[in-house]
Image 1 (cartoon, rainbow, N blue to C red):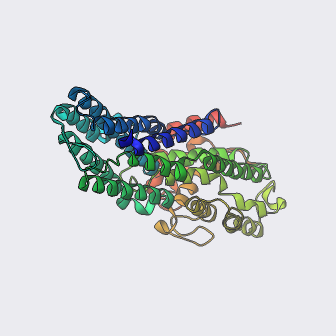
Image 2: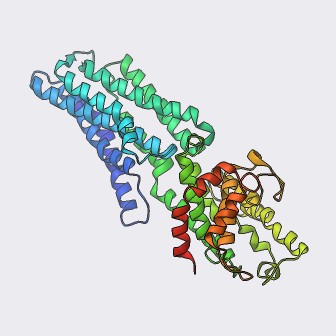
Image 3: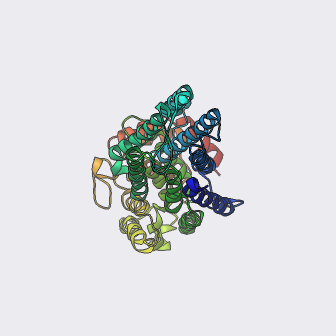
Amino acid sequence: MQYAKLQIFCFLLVVFLNITYIKATLNKKISCNKFYDALMAIAPIAIFFDGLTAITVNKLEQIAHEWNLVFHWLFFISMDLVIYFLYLYMIDKTIGMSKKKSKLFLLSLPTIISIFIICLTIKDLKFYEGNYTNYSMGISVITCYTSLLIHYGIIFALMILKYKHLAKRKVNTILISLIFSFSLLIVQAINKEALISAFFPTISLIGMYISLEDPFIRRLEMYNQEMVSDFSTLIESRDNSTGGHVKRTKYYVSIIVNSMKKDAKYKNIMTYDYCKNIIDASPMHDIGKIATPDSVLQKNGKLTKEEYEIIKKHTIEGSRIIKETFSNIDDQDFLNVAYDCARYHHEKYNGNGYPEGLKEEKIPLHARIMAIADVFDAISSKRCYRDALPLDECFKIIQDGKNSDFDPDLVDLFLAKKDDIYKFCIENRK
């Protein structure tokens, strides 16, 4: 047991973390990340076999050579799976995981090759006597090192390429994990007697748990989102002509965002967090209407010029409210998107919108998305002063607004989903 003290400590720590995580998420309304769950399951197994091999490699005379090979094979395979699930988890939490099986296969190819090589070469594993402890060396060991370098090298490259569009909290967590893992690899490669592999899954799990997966923090984030949604719905209820506007515009935004994720022009921009922030922030776009007088907001007829100027101020008021009232939400990226959607969703692509008359690319991308969703719902829904326009006419208005009111590329993506939108509108019309 003296050779496995580190592994025993790490094993107990990971088991404790597993129990804490399961208790905190069991029967709770918290969605769990399947890759993190898989990591939680495989990590203690890898640490267990790490400890077992640390003992058996020092008892070569008592333990049959074949059993030593089996234990090392199980250790290498389980550690390779730890690397694999960490790799998939980091991709999923940053750029998002594609649902296409072909892409998942490509992402899994390095692991498949690594496991194949380990299985093929494990019989050639050699055991050496060191000054403090015995250790193993061979192609299978080098393959595990290489697997970590390849997988984490890909993650590091993604961090560099997409840095501007990733949530900084996640980037910092993942970069620290990468640096720590590479440091462990260097130490282990230089000092083969170190036997510190157990640190890798243990510290990675704890780091991800504290920064990204802590159920308590995630529950607070969920409550914050519910608060935002409820607040937006409360404001919407003041305007008796726009019932369901929040729900419908959120759907239209998600339609555009999901199409953008598949478009070559936007694939480097539409990261997991950016897409989620746009969709989650969309209900807040009209939050400034809380400052609009009822006499204007609920007027049963056409607005006068003065009244129109009053209601236009809801964009400025909305951005102010988000900046001042929701500053307690500890997600600056989300707040920035919400601020822009509230302030700029009435800007027009040709520069004739309000409040600042921004033009084309100077209008934040998420505000350009919001503009299409907002206008389409406004014209396709029943108002107190008019009936909903026919859907074909609504689609034509969006098409006619291409290059003038709306971003032409986003219009094309929106209209490409006409059938889905048509079905949604029919189901949600009163």
